[in-house]
Length: 353
Length: 248
Image (tube, rainbow over all chains, first blue to last red; front, side, top):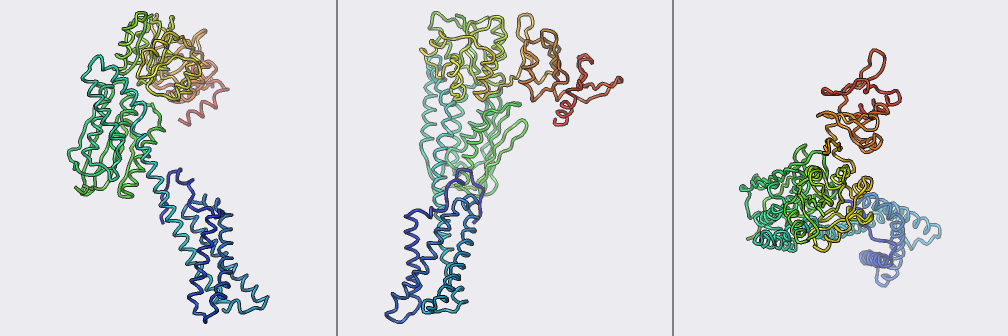
């Protein structure tokens, strides 16, 4: 149970269910009753006394369960703000303390009213048994809630990353500028306009496909090259890209659309802001079973364009790398004085073909 | 109508020219690939309208428009942009002419028809709303009918000089029309008042020196041609100058 630093959006997402809701309460009652039945069945009572024993156990278990639900309902918001792992640990301790207090109260009550038939145990054994059983049940419940919240979170992250992958590629600025270029070329250079339309279509098609297991590196590099061709029409001699990727195994898998957005960033935040342009360098290295791809661009002195946008694209790629590789992959940013560099590291996976 | 086209991308310039060549009432007199060229060509050709791309390296469209305002015959301005949600909001709010790329023939004609001259203060507001630099990267001096752009990073100090403000920079001295007050607020991050009539670039100050008559004086880096008397720190500004020096 490691609490990884999560993006803010996930933090606001609830991981504890609403204990005050009718549906949740119903399930709690149901589970409590099942626990009571299991306990009674396991107790080896003489025949005919089953229902009596069950009702005694039920009263006690339900009392614990409902008061536990009430406690959680009361403290839920405060617990949520404490962070995931802490929330679960605190809830566990809170519920345990409550169980101990309640079983002590039960013991004292039965002693006052003198009906020793309700609880047959000695004081110590009773408290100990309650404590042990409740620990196991609460721990199981917590584990269940934790896993289901993790599962929900991963679904949300995946959906978000899919949407933002789309947004990352079709930057409106790029789309409209390309259209303008094509409109211009239809008169001056129709065959170039034709090529540009084909390239743009290929690029859009690539954004709409979404291969789950990632794409082969070869395809990723092709998409980036198509993108480069379109931008080249617009920027002319200002844009040059050097590809040092011969060392990379072309069948290696990489999350879909990672290189092209980085090239786009390099152009949008780097080359476009330089009057004389510059050179983007894409270089790849293989080190045993791990691959490294670095993309770097020159930066204009003292000019920051829309840093927010850049961060969004980066966190998007980071998110998808996280999803695909966990701790085995990394996305590093190196903001030098004259060059901006992004380095991707990920394990080699040649796919199943 | 004489039109000057300014865009850093050739296909974008071609597109505008293609459309305007079909129109009888407009005459494209020149094309510029950046803001600096635009200012020079505007002086040379005296266009009635300048079509200005917003996103250009170094001098963006809005700063270029602010410099064009210094011309004797200030041209009307129409901005062009592929996508700039903030800038477009700002233009709409102030009825400033703009066209979206890909450029539509009808839309361009309408924008040119309504094109108007823009006040410097309007442009500054637009820049801030569009999340572009509100701080210009150059100041603009008029020298024998030409506009001279002086990079703000070259400026050592601004000194009030009767009606004008004198700029002392790495390549000499020039007079500009901006008021010292507006310069102080625009470049507050880079400059500090050493007395009421002078702003000095903080990173150009080498040290503060006490002269024989007990007055504090700023010593500038690399051979400045500023009169020593102008660099005496007034008592009122001394604390602020020291604070800014310490920060840098």
